[in-house]
Length: 269
Ligand code: ATP
Ligand code: MG
Image (cartoon, rainbow, N blue to C red; front, side, top):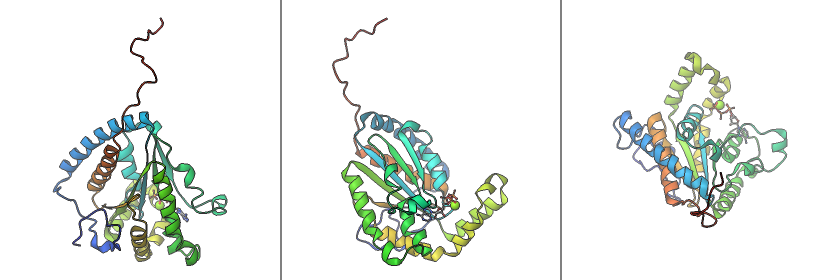
């Protein structure tokens, strides 16, 4: 586990065993990372206000992960303080018959963000080269063309002014076991315990292989993947917050100028 970079190079073939899910950067303890995360969240809130007002850029944040890696948790922690009118969260579950009757991007496109908006994908079009591949839901000759379809789709969004950030929350198989045991044993978590998750866990290696292909074939300059060490929830939240903040700072958003000179306008009684 030598590699600590969180963003694989675009030309690299990703080997997930080179990315340490326990990695916590320069942080030895949780408190310091949480303090920094909270500072970043404050800044993010201020930036979102300008971003929302300006209506020039849009942001798409994609979360993919194995069960229990914390998609729900990270979404809650990072987006909780933002203006909810500017955030749309879309969760992609098993496709309906109507959705299956169309191409795999049909159900995704309407959830992409308009200008001024942030869309957050809890699972995404990547399921169509992950669960679909692992369970043989369509023939290989169908899913293997989808990496190109996805890259073209994301390029289209990028060309239309959308910044795309894709996060793979990387937990270890041992950590998943602990979290499933905790779901089984903690009353307030039991509603999340699904027997089906145990079946998926048996396919861990096939999923890792499918993820490695995703992280290698769809890691582009315009829509990079971030491999987030996620065994420690506090580091996971810190990294995701910081990455989104950096991307929003880069947009250099500004409040729009008023339509006309409003300085002297008298407000009627
Ligand atoms: P949680 O982590 O809270 O359990 P979840 O995202 O796992 O949330 P579930 O309702 O448990 O939500 O699972 C959704 C299921 O839908 C997942 O097993 C996922 O693989 C599956 N799914 C999503 N997209 C597709 C797709 N395109 N084809 C087939 N299955 C899909
Ligand atoms: Mg689930």
